Length: 429
Ligand code: DOR
Ligand code: ZN
Ligand code: ZN
Image 1 (tube, rainbow, N blue to C red):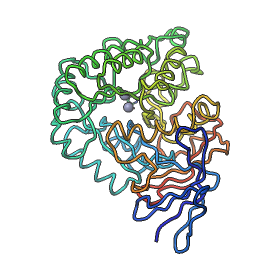
Image 2: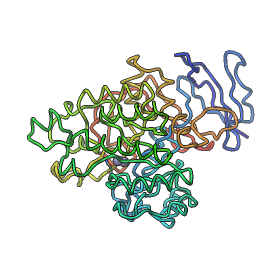
Image 3: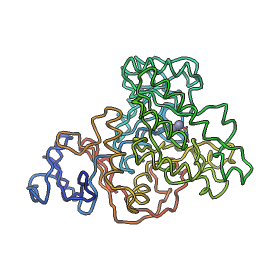
Image 4: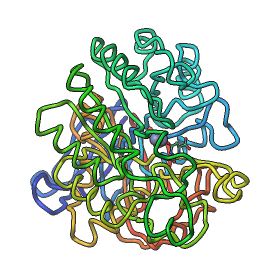
């Protein structure tokens, strides 16, 4: 017995419209896809039925940059709560950052995360391993052993790798084993103590600003190192106009550089910050309106490849501290698709296909993953989305332990209503 998901709406490639399809799920895989117009309704006798009438049917979303906080910061999030939050956001595969406690810098910790994900997680969890031991930037980790254990790449996300030589060594080693290096770009000598971008908001409030160059200097440095070593180099959470320019230039030269952007950097600038509210504090910070235009243009012309959330839950107590002491980061899973669908697709700037590609097939392609495509024979990782009901963002309803979002109260369309991983419904409204 299988499950027929009937009457789903699926985007037609290259055309800005949806068509009605029926999808048969058997043994965790997509066994058939019927085009309603050409083939009519399926014979569902003996099968379970999920009626997706009026819903978008998409490959499950893939988020290559998230913080699940386990081990060590279970008060902020666990693999159990983080994957539930992801499922509620329509995500079926997520890649988690190693800035836990202990950090994920050896096989034992990789295995710990994979075991937890297996027993307590409800979506696929792919761990990253650290570039340097304890993320201190002094000594490389054992890449080969962690690759063997199952990491999907190496990163010190949370901090930048300060030494160019260390980064070059990491890239050479990663390249030799065909693994990507994923970089949080931040030169510490340029950020000392800043919480917000060097712009209107910092000036008005007499705060020390974080300059764009603190990010872009690492981007430029690393692109040259990627050219020298031949590694696949992936830039995290691009926020500055200069970074977009450098990545565009690198791609023009055929250097293997790819990059990602977060919803908040596409939608908010420092001029939107309402006041001294730590829910608007993240790293990299919200930049100026000019930077926002640049990252949007970068995504649109392919300079930026994919969309990620940088889901970064923190406790209410931590986020209640004063601005300087509060940690950087906002949660992302449960608002990402509705935000981008409402603000870029419903407004007519992007097609639905454009947005979905950057949240499904493109991340899969970049990291060589077998998911992200709605096709017979693939794993049945699927998401249904209600495109027509308007609802306000209500952090009290989040399945994440984190409530730290600047988007509370935003009225949005595009709410996921069912998430399926390998043929199993892991979350539904
Ligand atoms: O905003 C952020 N939060 N940026 C980072 O680089 C780290 C992350 C976290 O771990 O909270
Ligand atoms: Zn980061
Ligand atoms: Zn991060």
